[in-house]
Image (cartoon, rainbow, N blue to C red):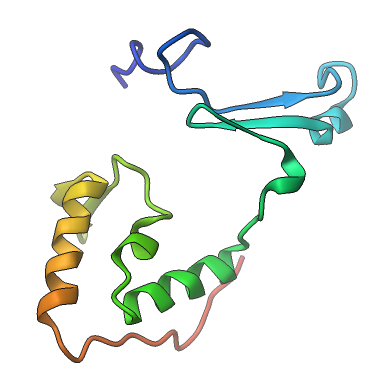
Length: 123
């Protein structure tokens, strides 16, 4: 991925996304649930302070943000390096910042913007 200078090892200046455990998962697989800390983008969290968003809730939160034209809430679940394609394989643009500009323009210029979720498919 050509990101060796940014990811891949734990060292000063790199982005850290880690889960620190209280027990060795090699010794017992159930030890993967013994989470002491979560480090996301270099920020340390205790697991009990995190609110887990289930897929159904995430879809609804994003739909609400779209309908209220809240660009920050709408973009929140996307990765900074998101890629948007036209089906099946035409790349339209890359990056959360570019995506934000695209949607902010639409949120500003489309007056009757509204979306409804008609159904869900779960696996």
